Length: 417
Length: 68
Image 1 (tube, rainbow over the protein chains, first blue to last red):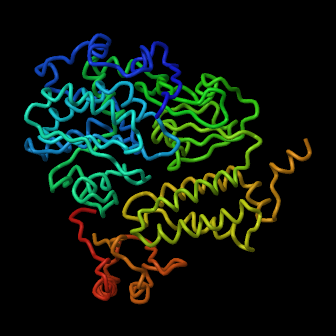
Image 2: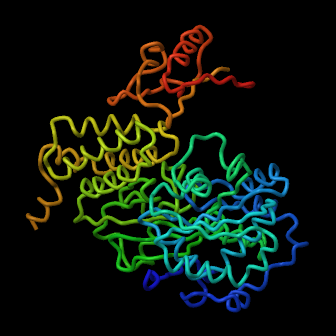
Image 3: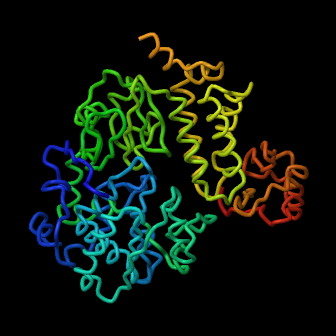
């Protein structure tokens, strides 16, 4: 990554991205955040995390404290910590940016997690294509090797693939070199790397845990708008003037995030929330939506990994959807029939629709298949893909109907203008 | 309670299960099973057991749950 994405902070005084958007050295990190509290004061870090309300930032949003407790209870001091910085989501840059610019905060989180769950092995799993992140984490680990004591410490390249960051795929890669999901249960927290309870935790979640350890659960709960708790990182992309990373108070609205990225309501058609595992929403409907797991779920959306991507009025939703489906089909781990054949068929149909060369029943078939694939893979890759497709068929219903008939409404609008 | 589970990685879409257990399984356009529900009612258990035994790749299984 040459040049870090532009960082815009909207959380009042930013916490993570206070200071320059360059690689933070250990000295800078310590000066800015203070050293970690001594071990005695963190004896109940899991309880503190549970009270903080921190939820995982990799996509699933699972409560972090509860996850750590599940591993700690089973581990007997022999757990494995897998620090997940694979970030395979094409629209997300927040994890790689965090690792590249605040590596010591991530390392702090890893140390605290290893101690809290009783891990004697720590594996950093960082996307092979995230070069700046790899370099920064590597340097930070060399500098802080002593902090890990007798724990076995490794930095591994995560393959460039959408499913490589999925928990069971990450564990499988560590063991066999193949980043493909495995059949669950058992889930990694029960039986992961070499059969040991394994905590697979996203890098942003670990960074947040480090901040909560430092400042307390009350501090974290005090941040956030309305009923939302805490802060979070977003990647804003598409039809905005200033795409990039944003640090927000959770509960901020989609509209506020768009305005912070230098754009307005005007000319926007739709918002993709949560990345390729997420859903499209009409821009008008999404404007007041609060970016927070609970409020989004209540309205049928998900914060996921914090992707907010904008589609302008000029862009064709059918073509955008078709490109995403082609990508998702190409990223199937090719293990489960419904995912391999279902996503390929969906991709072929949406591609014909996009090109306005649809077969007689392409739209009807895409609708039917979109309702059939959920829960029919070892991992949730097909679920994510058809969830996005169902939202697209709803939000761009007129566009899909026109494409089935061989017309593009956006192209007609451009010609008329 | 007894449930029917499919190992999606093992399943190769042979389709015998849908023939032996149409009460619970139908096939998609590519011959892979779609479960109509997971809970197996007591009267269907013998049929379900036959389907489990017939699967050539051992992808189908019955699971007993202690609690509902």
